Image (cartoon, rainbow, N blue to C red; front, side, top):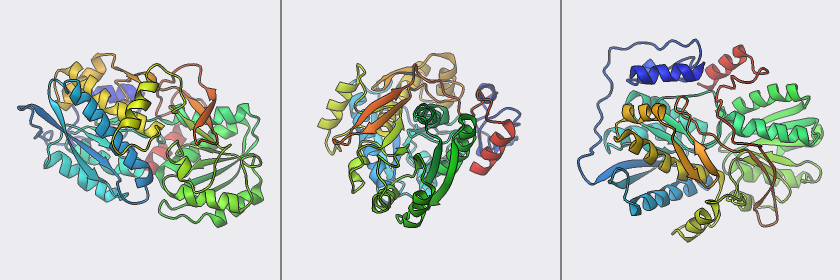
Length: 431
């Protein structure tokens, strides 16, 4: 099992370099994988814990096509840091954060990660959005034995000793969305995505599960992340006449998609959309009313939990706030609290000690989405599943919810319809 394999890596202290962890073309620890060996010693940390502060890195796209989403993630990380500092810091040390701009450019994410770890000497990095940004960061944090906290839903098929995942993996968002569609009697589905690793991998999984559910995929189209013209692709949707569109488009490209959708005469009444990247902040930025369409997330602002009202109030009062909360920014917010819990359980900022604490303790965070629990073996957290329908206020009315929190299964090893050979090929293709 992938979880046991990751545990073995952690227990053995095999955190030295990315070369030791690049498995099946992806770097994920999986069943049957054998870590390559290296004579290089583990990277020596330059993190300074001698003073009253601890440096952390925030790495978000503040410019480029993903800025529409990532600016809020950056700002809520600042809010979480301010809250933790006001409450005494982490192990009594105040957080000193260094903000970097990934600029929606994957090489820049890698370069900024290298800088944060080796020049700024941060103890951990928080951020990213697209899987391409995470894939760019991954070998760098593995080489330098750093820590990266990733806050956004993604395609799964990954587990790294140097990454903690606070967004949903596939069985916590994609599969609940498909279960919802099946419960609504959907028989035909059209897949529309941005042209990069997350949408293509997610859609490969969707097609397998759709076959299991008896749902026919009647079309599949992609547009590059930095392009906004969906006219040709939407014309194919019109011709296919699907019951639903499954949207794995990210960033500002969604604006072009929604524009083409309405210009082609499609509406939520005739051809509804279910999205996995449009949340409360993105909905009013689409340039067109999107009332009646759906999204699959683990957190919505409308969620009725004990901690959500205080979280919403704190965010709305925070300088530069967008005024609305959303799943990715909530997952970013709790990522800093998860780090605090890990460090304090370890009694140390040392990466190996933090990872051991994840294995030895039950680490929980009382989050706005509910009490989440860390799986110390695969570094993902339990999450509730929710489907929301966009209302006229660009909020989401929850129309479906999982019966309980969903345990993370990033490699979908608990699903018979997902064969091992397909899993391995997708892991290799994801890179």
